Amino acid sequence: MDISMKPINSNILQNALRDLAGWSVENDRLIKQFNFGSFREAISFIVRVGFEAEAINHHPGISNTYNKVEISLCTHDAGNRVTELDVELAKSIEHLSWV
Image (cartoon, rainbow, N blue to C red; front, side, top):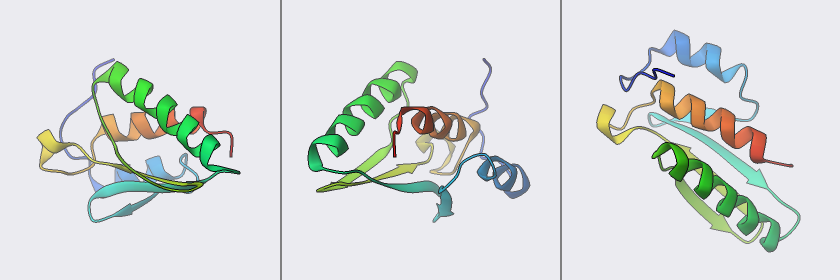
């Protein structure tokens, strides 16, 4: 798969968001908060995201407070803007989530 490392334009990004329920764009980042039933579930999700991110060598910002996990995606090599790689990782993360 040939994924562009260039920032994607707003039209393409808005189209991508249609397939990413709950994701939004804030400060040039794709962001979503996931709410789990417990801290243990939240941490389990974070570990799964970590393995997925490491597999493609693209690492999200992750914030956790008890049962809440916030994922933030942008590409440093693209000037901290959203690229196709971020959209693809968001899609992969959606497949990992059970909430």
